[in-house]
Length: 341
Image 1 (cartoon, rainbow, N blue to C red):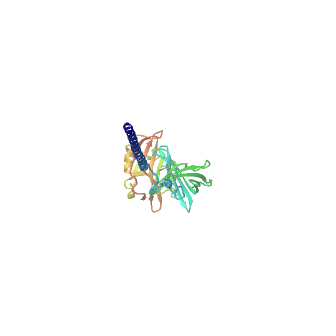
Image 2: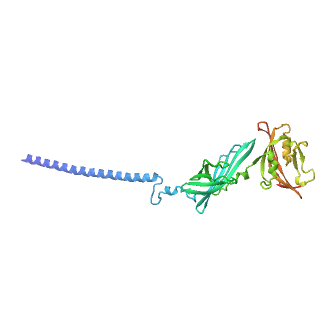
Image 3: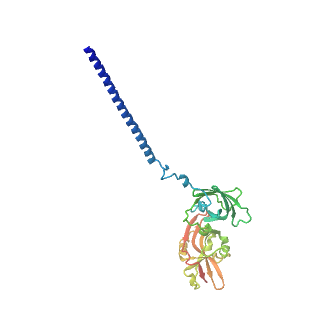
């Protein structure tokens, strides 16, 4: 009986211990599980926060996504400005073109100024054209009807202009006969940039020697101070030099005439220059050129009863048979543009 009770007691104690251990294991499992869940939840939050900190342009309440707002919207107002297309490099051929876009009461007006510069007989010369007209803007594309200035009765030139951020792509119709090509990708200039003057005002005009007299005596088109290059000048047209002030005219003091030989039936060209150029010219006296390229400034001499013009020479280049420069003589610029005789 005693052994039976002892067995019962031990059995009951063992069951109780197993019960207590079960409870403890359950509590331990719950504690670990909750901790893991909390850690994962915290990691998730930290991870999300970290992603937000590293991600750019993520919309928030204080910093909304403005990428759509910042995208350039093409309107008649935003395309207004000055655009440039330039491929010209010094000494080589190329274009210097400009496009002006104006907004007049919601309607666009465009104006092109185009210059193509190239070399001819060792001197730089150019073709130019300009014209304008109204344009209709639809989306980012404008269709314009351009009338070339001085183009006579030619029909308007149809031009398509595609605007993008800070540029305008210009394409003329196949039947457009503008004197100088205006096709190209034009870059918009900063608002503070002043428009470039037409190339005819800041480029050196080139003329044939045979055209010199008509050129300098065209009082309507040409003014004192205009610079030009005369090419195909016969070498003997500067065969001698004489003082321009030899008759006592103080207006010409220190200046020299460059003249042809006395037996030249066509006479002298009407060149006047500085003492510096004569000195430079004499230094090359032993090298005979085939032709000359003469850079000059148009000056005027006013008398009591008459007015005449001459070419004030600032540079002379001696050219061989192939048009290559074999020597160069340079001198001073004119101290004034109008003299008295």
